[in-house]
Image (tube, rainbow, N blue to C red; front, side, top):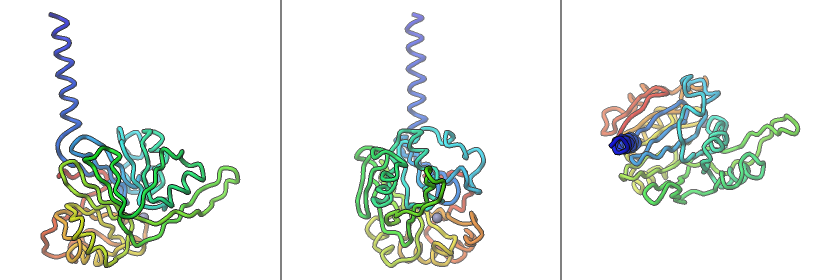
Length: 271
Ligand SMILES: [Zn+2]
């Protein structure tokens, strides 16, 4: 009888764990700049552009990579430090692959930053399913650059390496919800194609200006090209040049069918 009770309690515990891991919801947590943690309806964890430890906007409690919990997959949009920084360490910590643009990951492997099995390559329009057939990740064009800055341990000097072409990601989750993480990008006409073809539910859109879309640009492409249900503005206020604000973005957008979440680093939205 005692054994039966013990087994029964264990089963209850296991069931509770499964329920908490699989909430059935999409949880999107922004961690400053473009760093994003997505928990899928099936409980998988995807981290995009993890720039955390030296990110002035990342809340202190997330400056330890362990604080992210178990990570199943890492995506990196391009080689710049404010996107790439903690990705190799996070890949090693979780033994999880860091997928990124083919040219960037080629440099990552050649330089010995990650072993080839942790730095798989893909390219624009390519769709990958590393978490099973129900989660599809497609790389899109981004109007930006992608140098990879690397400190050579042999010389102690900084070197600039080829970082491939920058990308954005369309991430389709188990329930069909589509997130367009735009990475760093300026305005380009094929955002209209991306809107029509992929029909993203949520866009995570850079608004800082200087290196990326300004609030005015971002509002234009949201309204005219992408037409998503939801938008989370990011990539602003991290350095002085990134002057755009969510208020300017929302003001430029005006009345819209897109619901904007002007969240702060560390905050989450459930869909
Ligand atoms: Zn950036």
